[in-house]
Image (cartoon, rainbow, N blue to C red; front, top):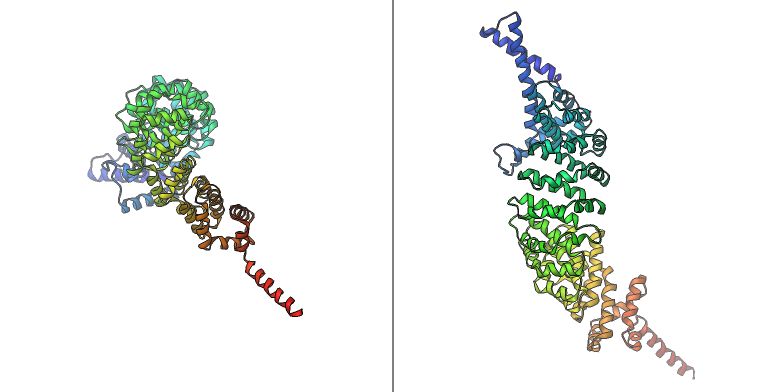
Length: 564
């Protein structure tokens, strides 16, 4: 491209071919017959150019013969080097290739559309360059044209699916009528073109609520629902994905999909032989359950056993999606959560965590939600062995959002009963939560603080609270929570006297009195609450200046006797 573009490339190529033919004596040196080889060489050069670009833009893992094999480091480096080189000439690249999408030769036109599509997928810079290439009007013409060949329409649809990733261009595509054209002609398309049409609408609808609403208003839900019943697997996949992309933005959009029969149409796909279809169907059902007071009713109880089976599916993606649906359903109300437990979901969720079936976020949060409604339901979650597994996840997970979710689940369980709180403390969770409460990440810190408050309030074992007080030396912000919980224990426990004596003997009580003078209001309040559980004379004797006062008093008496 730096040498002068396609024109110079083709002219030089044609001249070389013509010269070679003359030397071999297979081409006349003058007359009309001299033009045809030059023209054929020009045709081949155009096709070779766009096909070469299309092949260069394909990632190593997706190339023919790769079979999904992970590419080597060298292959990845070569690919990135190639893409960076294309990015350096992206403006000239698009100016050269875009006109070929208008070519009268079908092969050249289709190859140009494919090349532009693959380049858009290869990097954001190339996608931006293609988006600025003013191709949208031409794409709309190709989709609307009655005489345009089906392969050209297919190529145009695939290119449009990349162009509308830009919200501005997506809005322009809506205003140009491209989406209406795809929807109105949908039933006339063959399955492959239907898939491409839904892909375009999905790329547009996933961006934001306004675009998803516009796609819904244009009638995108109906063709997607009809496609769920088609035998063509790629069409089923993209149809379920599109419905999920629409429903995820707002309650009214989820309601629109539901009222059109979304849950009923998706249910048969849960038994599909294709794991991607099962995953996308579950993803859409999760979005339908996400919003609204009646959201949980959109999935009938008869579907619960199927969801439980899918939590143990061979596909990790299906397991994750099924756990997400269970989480959203369990949030609806206690009765729905109870039905899910009765269906046997606890075992599957726990196996998903212990078996390393993808991210632990959804299964861990589901366990917390299921046990958050009552002491009895929390006990059922504890009985399945959830606490040691959650504790392990809290210690070992390297993802901050996962630690925050696990802490939230432990808080939901621990607040239900003293037995649950003691079980969590016995698993060694409290020091980990205290350490988590000191990290800079506010989401993790907030989750840890909430968990500490919920669990500590229910702790009835003095040793666990003493451990919290001692661990607070490395997490000072958690000391008030531990002291308030300890004050509650001293006020209610039958063995309060023995525990208080031990607390004084260890020096902790005296140390707290020394800290009080410079403590913040929150810590002062906690120390005062703890002091209130001790006899006043004990607290007085533990004050930092108590011994000095005694000595001053004794010295004062001696002085009085001397004067007398």
